[in-house]
Image 1 (cartoon, rainbow, N blue to C red):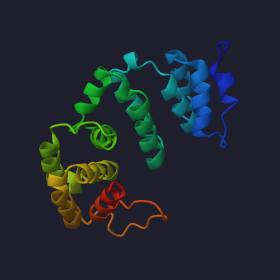
Image 2 (image 1 turned 45 degrees about the horizontal axis):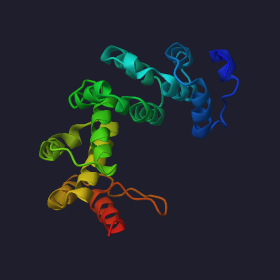
Image 3 (image 1 turned 135 degrees about the vertical axis):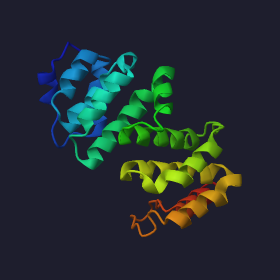
Amino acid sequence: MDKKTAEDILTHINRETKLGDLRKIAKEIKQDHELAMELWSTEEFLPRLLAILIMDKKLLTQDVLNELDKDMQTHPFGERNNLMDWLMANQLTKSKKTIALIESWENSSSALQRRTFWYYQARLRWTGQIPPENTEELLSALEASIMQEEPEVKWAMNFTAGWIGVYDEKNRARCMQLGEKTRLYKDQVVARGCTPDYLPSFITIEVNKRK
């Protein structure tokens, strides 16, 4: 692919653009951190998703991530969570250095970074890897602080408890009891075929899927 400018690329991005389309564009560009920062500077959601795909993860220091995090705060709630989740999945989990940063974020001053810490812990479990040895510490933290957390962090903490309950039989009852105590998402209405976030329901459904 010939060298493209941000202006060229933006002509191919509109409201109809899908995530798969962004991945195709990124595959042609490969890695171009300078171009990524140009796309990021548009302050638009889809260009920023594309920017994340072509960033150089070696340049994603804590200071840089703090700036990206700050920029994400200008987006609506759902968009900023999607941007951070996309960054985690496509960049931050790809190197030991950035994984170490994620693992340091449990008590970050940033809600998005705390959310990422917990979402990553959930991801370690549902991807079928050997569960880390920090389950007891996580459950103690969940029980102590989940109800005081910001909504986006609360969801990720609850999600982590859900996957611990699915894969760790000895802690299953404890995770279900956490849901019964907090009543988080108990009244949530979900589309047919979707799994509710309420822990007793989530764990029961996901365990039964695996029998």
